[in-house]
Structure formats: structure tokens, C-alpha cells
Length: 514
Image (tube, rainbow, N blue to C red):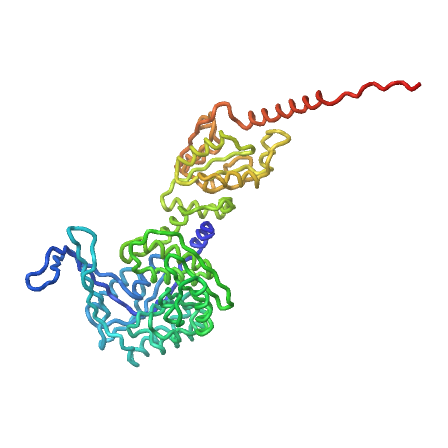
């Protein structure tokens, strides 16, 4: 499945996504917690660094930029300096801010965190100070925001709603946006706010609540996947949703679709350093995939990968497609997924080379696998980060004059046997007599061949060196080759046949009658 997801990521494109929600500015003051103040029993923080980060819906927009989307941000700030900082930060990231309305009657939402280090060790949050109002937007600001957003909707492939209950996601705004999105066929994915009445999200395409938020919304505790499925079915029915993604921490994501289909998409175990931002990352990933028309189950799988990478980081960071690809490429590999057609293999190799991985290619018939093959393939795998084995097809083997009974095993069996070896990342079957055309298509960094070859004797060497690649001959296992192995087998068969003939009973002469 990991290889399938690699192809999915590479087909995401660069969708245009509208983010609607509460803009938050996160301010951080870092310093050393040196001692207790003489004025009061409080920690004295000696400041050394200040930092600003995008929070709330602005963080979702930033994560979408990391996932190579075009992003429009819709929301409200104050007319204060913090509102200017939010806009400047968004514009610097390349985000369209034409749908952000400035409202002089309310401040920009700011969360000020004081982070203290004890004896230069890991920082801890000492205090958080919030400046905000959570009253709903007034009629004038509501109308202004909607007048900007509604004409934009048809130009976007998806809408993400990031609701932090700071006053932007009012019933009127959500109902109006959801109605227009349904009319023009644009999917809307909502990250709901805990404690709010979920009826305001009715008519969205999907919602992405976590375990606790789901429990509050449905009125019963979500402990197991069956609880999550029951909750998902209720939410789909009550809110007229197409599907629900219930995030279950280390258990993965429980997907429920409107037709009653359910599936738990597990995630692999990771070192969890900080869960901050994981929910935003899940929303952003599902949003990009929805815009690209990806199936719901694959949306959940991609969200598991991105969310998992997020919790491995300290603080809120953006996760790139390259990081997701690298994570998938490093994961466990199913044998059947290793044998790929040329078009898919090209995409994988391009992804690996973009990540800086060294790609090694070798080729051969591999008709009768023996210890010599295994030894040289292990050497080949050690030469780089990724090993491709190109296998001659049955027709191709027959043109090589290896004998009337060759190949002994068909191309499918030979490819499957090679794919089962741990050190081999990909297997491809080619029909040509030589691998030259395949080399030109894949452009491996290193071409290797097992045997007593000079570089110039390795087929395709001039092609590889022409584009800057390397060519190398690897060692052989003395006394072991396919020809020798087949010779021993045939000799043994002849010996057994002769012995069988000599041991057959001889019929005694018949007596004459009379």
C-alpha cells in the first residue's frame, strides 16, 4: 500500500484551496528560567528570543503551502499591529489575503507564550496570555466577508473550515458558504470546534473530529473503533455528510461513509514529541487530497502519514510532500508492490533522486537463482539507497541463445523471487535484448553488473556515463554460475536415468512348451 500512496502523492497537482476560519497570531518569548524573583514567588525569565508564528486557520493555510497548494485565506483580523503582522506573515508565505477583512471593533486574536529553559535544557511553557474576543461577527463584517468569499468559491477546488470559536464561523457564514459550495460542486472539509453545536456544519462534505470531540458531539464515549464507526454513522446521518474522519491518536483514523461503509486506517507507531498542530496537518492533507479527487480511504492514509510526521516534531512545523514520500519509501514493502511497470517506476525513481537518494540498477535473466546471485545483489544494494533489478522477459531470454530449454522459470516467477529479497527495492521486466532503452528512461546513478567484466564490457555503460552516472563491476562467487548449476543438475539427471535403467529387472528366457 505504501507504493500506491507514493503514486497518489505524485498525482496531487497544485490545487487552489480556500481556507475559512479564525486567524490567530502565536507569539513566543524564549529565555532561561534563572531563579525566583525577589519581588514575588514567581519564576524570573531572562528573555533571549522572541518569535511569531501563524496559528489557527492561518496555520492550516501555511501547512497547505508546504503541501504545494495555492491558498486563499478568508477570515478577520483587527486593525491593530498584530493584524498587520498576520497579513505580512501570510503574504510572505505566498498566501492570497484578499479575503481577509479588518474589523476595528475587535482585536486580532493573539496567544502569547512564555517559554523557559532550566539550566539550558529543554524549554517548557511557563505562562500563556491570550488577547481575544469570541463574540460573533457583526452584520456589517459578516456581509463584507461573504461578499468577498462567495464569488471566489467556483475558482477553488476545495474549502477548508478551521473553527476555533473566535467568532468567524457563525451559523450564517457557514450556511451560506456550504450552500454555495454544494451548488458548484466544491468539497468542504471542516475541522470542528469542540463544544460547539455540530449542526452548524450540516451539509459539509466531511468533518475531522478527534476522539474527545467526537464523544462530546454524539453523547457517548468513543473508546474503540466500533464506537468511532457508530459515531461516524450518526454524524453522517444527522449532518448530511458524505464521510467522517474520526482521528484516534495512535490507533489511526476511523473512516465512515454516508453509505454505511466503515474502515479503520491504522498508522504505524512513532515517537511522539509534540501533538501540537497534528489536527491542522490532518485537515490540510485531507483538503489537498479532496481537491485532487482522491478516494476517502487514501485521504485517511495520507493524513496518517502527515499527522505522524507532525507529532515527531517539536512545535508546529510544515510537512512537505518530499518528507511524506521519504517516510513512505522508508516504510515496509510488500513483495507484490515491488514489481512495477515503467511509468510507475519512473515516478518512484524521480522522487528518490529528488530526495538525494542514490539509485542503483542491475540487470539479467536470473533464471535459476543461486548463492552467486544473492551475493552480488547484496553488494549492489550496498552501493546506494535504492536497488532496481531489470529482468529479461521470457521472449528476451530466448533471443540470447542460452539454450532451447531456457528460461527454466517464467518471467513472473523470476520477478517475484527477486522482489522477495529484502535488499531489492524494485523489479521491472523488459522485452528488449539489452537494457539500453530502460537505462535511458530511468537514468540510474549507478549501473552495476556481477562478474569478471571490464567497465566497457557492461552493456549500457556509455549511456550512463554520458549523463554523468557511474558504472561498476561487482565481484563473483567462485565456482558458481547459472551454467554450472544447470550443468550439475543435468549431469545428475543423466546419472539417475542411467542408474534407473541398469537396475530394472531382466526377464528370464521362456521355456519351450512340450
